[in-house]
Image: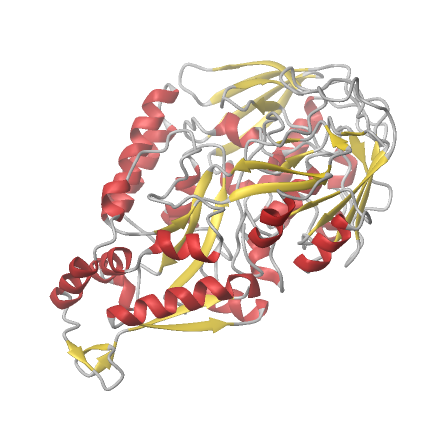
Length: 550
């Protein structure tokens, strides 16, 4: 999630709170795309500590509570999942050896591995699975994403020591995908009995790394190799314990400082560098830029479809047609991010092409605004209706988007629309988000499939004071789309699910419920000495198989 309170996924946030509060999905190992894989330079070298700098410190380390990209990046090395989603989108065993689904789709039975232990010495078993799922579903956990991923969850039970049964309230074809995410990673049951605040600082899993000290505020986290690790999924780039002795993660919010630390040799790798830095590093000897296109929702402007000027679909369509979003993104980000032409990025399984609806057409934008009644002009050239200026309040809290926001503001003025940029602190952002006191918010959400649309556009995910922070920031509520969401959950195979989500994308596009700008790209910049890196299915860096030549 982006932003300091913008809540995004592909670039780290700065500032306080809210952004930290939403986010998106994933797991699944994929190959290194930057040329630094383990095949070059002989067999992997054992030992050494990788020094990694990241931009955003997660407000909470516990993936059951936190939805952020920063939390997923730091917790995936610590926690494993019941099943693993491969780079091709299929599912394979991980902590579960096998599973079966009842004919009515309401009962999932998992046969578990019997050779797995948590790094605190406790044995992994069916009781641990039950404890984890109940922990996610417990309202006291205050889960900001994980609980919504298993909204159909009813209960679970241990049939025997190594067989767990999950019962759903309704069929959910997305359950395996949810169980594959770090957000539903399996933690030691003993730790789940502690306070949520304690878990936010330190978690215990069965993964290839563990942490002794946990997350240290404004510093980072030290991950240490789990020497007993022997249960990586089949498609992983490596099996057995990690090659590295550890990973020292530093939080370095300033992009220039992060880039300088890398090029001066103070660190080995960095995530989230801006396009200027990555463009330069591509040409710098001794460094490799590893990249992966993020699947999921494009970086977009999300209009408030429930109230305010953008509750009018004609005004939303006018903004979509009247602003040359692709050109703005290309200029601001030096062509490093592909232009977006629909709710989902091109790398997302189940994505349906919506390009025809996103053509730049200022004349059509003018006609739409005229038909919507914004026919007057004031002394500053802005459109008016009944003496009121057409004003759109953009709520955000992240300095990194300033250049783009200024360009959008200027382009909107040419249409006669005033964009008011409201850059606020994190607490104010959250308060106004819950109160629906905004006209547009910007963010992106990484996810390995189209089911993210249900998280982003389902009416049960509209943020309110009672519900709390949630992901439907467009405040979109459409009965036809709700029907399609239920149909997608009941789909019996992937092709049917994708067909239904294709209809969802067409309806969302028809309603201009999101204004896509560009498709995010995940980057891991590293010294050439860093080998064996990869990415998870959602684009997060995967360092399980990483090693150092020196």
